[in-house]
Structures are given as structure tokens and as C-alpha cells.
Length: 375
Ligand code: UD1
Image (cartoon, rainbow, N blue to C red; front, side):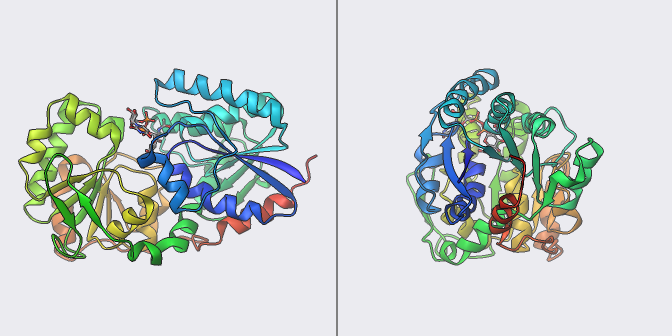
């Protein structure tokens, strides 16, 4: 058996690791070992995703926690080097673009372990995003590249990666969505509002298709006092037209407190701020909504699969296929209200689902990797 370490670090990794672990566990060629770096560590951001998505308990948890980028990356590298020395894996497979992705690839590559990057080749060309740095570093030193769309293949080829190391095999987030959508839609949505003594219930407080979902956590949107204030005022203005539900990321929540903006948020009655949700509740909330207004990466893909209008409040995206083919649209802050009006007037973008976003990517990945001959 060949030993392969799979690395999971932060929330968006867990939906990608779940189908992969399930497929690797059936393999007769690979012995999978799951390492959680602990970049995200609490029940809301980590624990319950393992439970809901049936991910086996990690064999090893590095428990690095939150810190500055350099400290977090260094802690992951220090812990992961020891894991690689003890386990002596044949391969290390990393997913996505978080600090854990880059840190573990760097360690493995220097130890001469073959590395595989799933979600390789995505480029926003915006180096002010920490994720873009992580993508560039990871792809510069990986051995094998698994991509979700052809534009990523083109990016890698332009950077000098040989075509025979690039495998376009589809989208693991969509595997998880396909596997869980029916269950998600029957998961009860009953959540306490943050800082208000009230619960809200989908179907009672607001009806399906009659609300929008917000998710914002990018440093460029929420770490700066004036951009966060401007966004809250825009969400507030929109909430007079349609109720908005926001499962608030811890980064955004902390900034709202730090900048003393909670009373501004509370002044909008139809702006519902709630704790981060589990996967099933979140996909229920999104799939029954009218639109999503976001700065996330993964949600651009999930809404494309759901044919749900998605407005991404960023100047660029590393996932352009969700714009060319899917239901995603990039919007500047100044255009948000106009774009939401257009969706409410029935002129939203519904789009198509890109090739191989079909729920079978994990199987294809394991099948492809079983055929690699490099030892
Ligand atoms: C990280 C990823 C980002 C991803 C996002 C999804 C990097 C560089 N960024 O950003 O790509 O889109 O995760 O969530 O890897 N916190 C908790 N509980 C947790 C984890 C974090 O309360 O379980 C708090 C931390 O204390 C910190 C804040 O949330 O203050 C932000 O966490 P951090 O890991 O720094 O980055 P994210 O913004 O989550």
C-alpha cells in the first residue's frame, strides 16, 4: 500500500476532504492518513463539519490555532515536518489555498515527498489576498496538479507546468453538495439571532425565495473600518427591500465588536445576524434563498451548481468559470444595490454547471492517482 497524507486546515477544506477521504478509504492502493492542522479549531468552524460530513477523526491534529500568518504558517510547518518524518508518506495531498495548504506543501517538497495539489491553477492575480500567495507558492513546488476547470489548466501551463502533470477532474465541493443536498433541505433552520433575544425560523419569520444570504470575511472588506461601515449600511438599506440572513464569520464578528458597530447592525430590523452555521443548515439556507451576496470563494461554486444568482463583492475572482458559465457576477460596492434590484425584478443570472461538476470527482481523483507510476 502507498501511504498518502491528506491535509485539512480550515473550514473550506473540510467539504473537499470529506469525499476524498471516503474515496481513499475504498482504495486498495492507498492508505490514507488524515492530518488536521487545527488552523480552524472550534466546533462552529471545524468540529461539526467532521460530524455532519462523516469525515473520520483526524489521525493527527497539530492544534496550531489562530496567529499571525507567519506564526501560524511556522507552527504548521514545524508540526507537519515531524508528522512526515514519523509517518514517511509516499504522497502528501493538499486542497485549496489556505495557510495550511502552502505550509504543508513546503514541508513535504523539502523532504522529497511527492505532493499533489487539488484546486491547483486558480489565480485571482491579486497578491493582496493571502490566498493568492498560498496558491502561487503551492503550485510552484507541487508535483501533481488536480484542477476544477480548464482555465486553471491554462494558468498552470503558462507558468511552465508540463501538461502531463495536470489533471482536470471536476469539483470536490460539488461532490459534497450532491451527496448532501437532499439531507440539507430537510435540516431544520431555527437559529438564535446574535445579540438579540429572538430565534428566527425559516418558513415562519421569512419564506423560501424571499430572503437573501450574506457572507463576508475577506480582510479587504471587513478589516478596514470604513469599508465595513459602508457595507453594513448597504446591507441595511437592502434589508428594507428583502430580509437578509448573515451567518457571521468570526473575523467579521470580531471586527464589528472592535469598531463598535453592533448598534448600527441592530438598528436594521430585517438584517439577521446569526452564528456561523453547520454545512447542512448553511446549504439549506442558501438553496432556499433568492440570491447570495458574498466575498467567499467556495460559495461562488456552490451557487453556480444551484443555478442561484450570486453577487461576489470583489474586484476579481480566481474562479472565472463561475462567471463565464455559472450564476456568478462580480460587483463593486457601489453597484450592489442596483444588482440586487435587478435580481428582485427577475433579471438575475442563473447560468449553467461547468463540465465534470457532477458529484463524482473524488472517485476520478483516486482512480487517476492509483495509476501514477513514479516510485
Ligand atoms: C481562512 C483562510 C481563508 C478562508 C477562510 C474561511 C487563510 C490565509 N485564510 O481565513 O482562505 O476563506 O479561512 O473561513 O488561510 N476563528 C475562530 N474560530 C476558528 C477559527 C478562527 O474564532 O475555528 C477566528 C480567529 O481567532 C481569527 C478569525 O477567526 O481571529 C479569522 O481566522 P483566520 O484563520 O485568521 O482566517 P480566516 O479569515 O478564517
